[in-house]
Length: 400
Image (tube, rainbow, N blue to C red; front, side, top):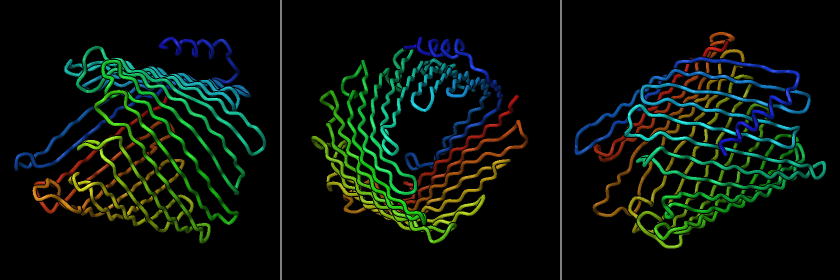
């Protein structure tokens, strides 16, 4: 399997087309994770900082029908070094192959080094003007250098097939079947197979109004006796009314039911219902939207803390200027209240806010800054349950 990267690499260079583009980037990155919580009645703050030096190399080769590419990327940080080799080949519009081999080496041996391989392929075929089929799959494996507290060696094999009927600005109907086998050689109890079927339909009018529905059914079968098998069914409906070219009114609804082979304090049946309606404004380089949402989660009263209701409002905005700036931000303030808590429950009602920001600023044609920021505080009725999590990732890249 590890030789597949070499095979694709040889294929690329022995069929060398006319146009080739080589790119090199170097960069400096900084990651920060901060968590604040109470531990044995003490206000505790946990901070994890990481500096990284990045190197990216890519070669893209194109001819009139096919596209080939290879990348060698890596970084060296304060805790570990990471290296990955990726190769890709697309033959016309029908066949795509992708291979990624990466590894991570820790300086301190309390964490075990690992190598991970990922191989993916897909084939797409047009049956007629409006009917297409697509088949694909991937195989991924991870190997540690020794027993690791952070994970196990595993193999994951996935196949999928899709039949689709599509007419532009009219309808989009698809039926897909997927099968995944997750195999852990050292533990049959966490090995499983998963079968998923998904049916979706979307109707769109020339004036821009849209109505879509999706039904997803998943059966997860654990191989051991520790974890129960389960059925999960999710039905979702989305509608969007376009008042004009700038303003639309989205409506969403989702209904999920999970049924397990048997219940325990880890695995149990539940029902989740979620719905929302809002408004969105899009014009030129800017967009903004707000969708108030209500979610109802219900399980047997024996499972303390699993009966709750969320009321929240997702407010999002985007600024896009292809030449120098892209910014996407979402803030979701809300309140969760629990139902039927036991007398000695460890749970309490709380206000929360989920803030996420993704951005990219280009200082020049060759230099840019990528940033990711998230902030997730919880303010509980019981002060000792308060929790704050913050994540910041900065990366400056220079392209030669």
